Length: 172
Image 1 (cartoon, rainbow, N blue to C red):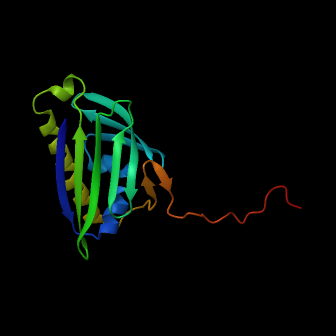
Image 2: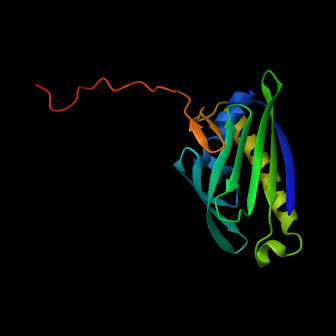
Image 3: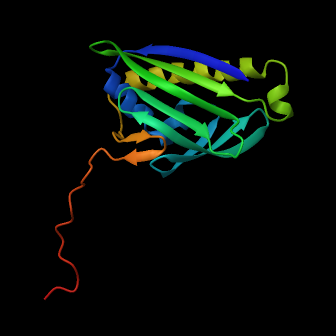
């Protein structure tokens, strides 16, 4: 197993950095290997990535999520090939540190080639640098999901969302 740890400091508040990170659809802008991310549910995402000449799709489950603090996930396959955590912490009033811990279990020939962990580490470094450039350029998140997830159980940010005021049909 390989463990990759990378971090970056960004010049935005921790809430802004966290809120932008929850916008998975924007990942292809920041992460070159990521071609597409679909949010299937609050705790489930579908990824399409390119590794060298190969394209791979997989499901990832968010197992822990605490606003402004942590997002932890795992590959949703029977035998997970990767899992990790992204930590967010304040480094000042308008600065945040984002720390990524990625754990990879080699699976197949491509993962066992020499330098494969180094290539993944470089991709994570590049993704964090791109995230820094994007979020500092925006200055604000372009969306947010503020709910929590604990052991895969989702708690929305609004425990009792407002009820519709539209009368039930038929009316009259």
